Length: 226
Image 1 (cartoon, helix red, strand yellow):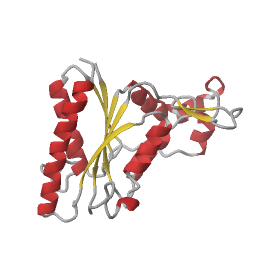
Image 2 (cartoon, helix red, strand yellow):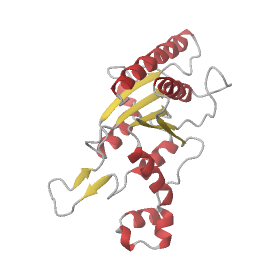
Image 3 (tube, rainbow, N blue to C red):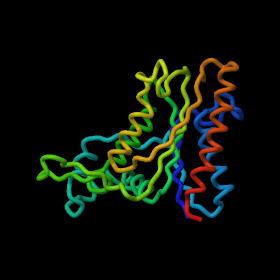
């Protein structure tokens, strides 16, 4: 069985095509999960909506607690890391991570950046060895076969690889880099563009993205354990 971690990060609560001003990324991520469940109904789905319920941003107390050995943490330190621990536990349990990732001002939503900051944890998702001057950092979630799927949406167009605005895309590249740092390097991506145009270009992009979601689900589901 596969454990699928479904993350939504849009500030918009609804789904486009159903709700007024609904989210395109929620539409794609919900489609992915529904089709996955149709193929693997017994798989476990963990859902977290970081768009509507964002994690607390990292602060000084969080940093002090994270870099204190677990056996030396005070109750206050443990409380400071409680939410982060829950997020890391979900990530460690997951085989497949599916993220609805809108682009806001060329990057990921602040809510999702807060999520990323909470899951990059010394001793839990990455290791740090001061005595190793050459490579002091090492990923701890590698060699586990985890896969990442990024389902994006952009108001404009041309942000994909080779596109005229690819250099301005700091959403997927940032997320890929963070997950790779902790050892999750296999990543699939697709996106809806032309969100602000609300014309035939957007309609074609939505239709293409939904078809791509269906194909991706079929491919990845065929690789999952029965």
